[in-house]
Image (cartoon, rainbow, N blue to C red; front, top):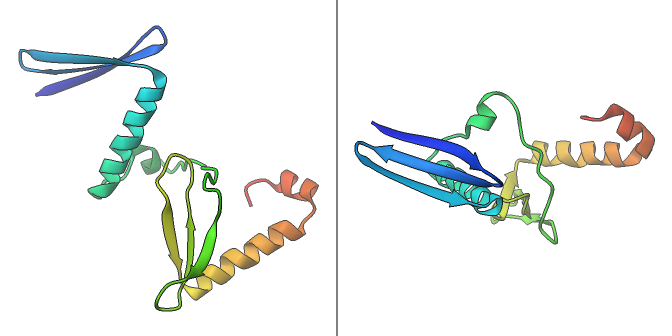
Length: 124
């Protein structure tokens, strides 16, 4: 059975693998470690596996990182929103009419509220 260990070495992270008599270790800086985590997460999503972070009910809040948010329609007339968030690659959301209306109405409600009310209510 293979073993994997992760340890800190100063400001670097060591990832070590052992299977039987063979072992390999890789030392990486924090930037390389984050890139590895992103790549592994994308590969897991590609094969249909969910991340363990999402399994405990917590969700990571991501900021929009694309220069624009494109809104349009697909070939069937459904609303489509295209953007990039956090370290994820760009993606498109296809919305049913009721989903698009709910998002539009909710955003208008939030934006029409004074900022101090929005801050005090938080996670609306």
